[in-house]
Length: 119
Length: 111
Image (tube, rainbow over all chains, first blue to last red; front, side):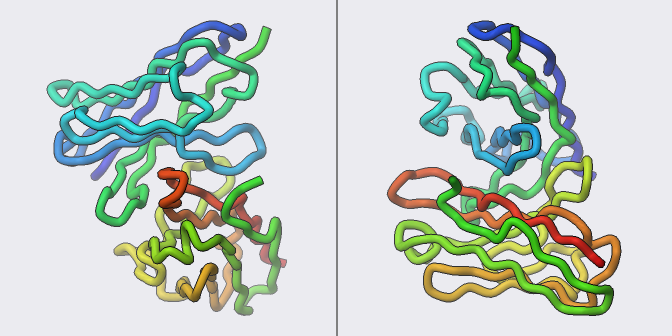
C-alpha cells in the first residue's frame, strides 16, 4: 500500500523558514517523479513544485521561485520542501504526491502538513 | 482566479445524475493535454478519481465518468449517493505556462 506521510509543518513568522519532509513507503520511491501541492484554508489546490526521479530536474510555480527548494533522498525514501522567506500567502496545507510525468497527473497523496505564516 | 473554471457548487438528490464542468483555454485543455479529476472528501486529502479524460483508476465506481471536448471537460456522477458529497477538482497542464493547473473546485451537495 502506498503511503506518504508529511511532517515539519507549524507556525512560523513572516520572513522565516521551514522544512517539510515526506516519508514514502509501499512503492519504489526512486522510480517516481514527486510533487508538492498546497491548499490555502478554504481554497482550492495549487501545484507548487516537481522533482524528477534522480533530482536532476526541478520545476516551481512562479510564486515560490527563489524561495522554495524541492529535494529528495532516494536512500531514505524521502521528499523535502525547504521554504524560506515565508509570506502570509504561503499559509496552506502542503501535500506531497506522486506525479506521473507521462499523464501529468498526481496519483497518490499524503495527508498533508499545515504551514501557518503569521506574526 | 484559476485558469481552469469550475462552478463553485452543484447539488442533486440521491439517485440523480449531476455534471461538473471544467473550462480551460487553447493553451491547456484545448491544446490536447489530458484532464484529470480529483475527489476531496471533507477533511481528507484529494484522491485521483478520473485520469486521461475518461479513465477510472482501480476501485472507482463506474458511476463516475469523464469527457472532454474542445477547451472543456466534464465529470458526470450518476446514481448520486450521500457519500459522494465532496469537493471535486479538475486538473490539466498548461503548455504556455509550463505548469500543472487545477480548477477552483466544485462543492457537491447531496440533498
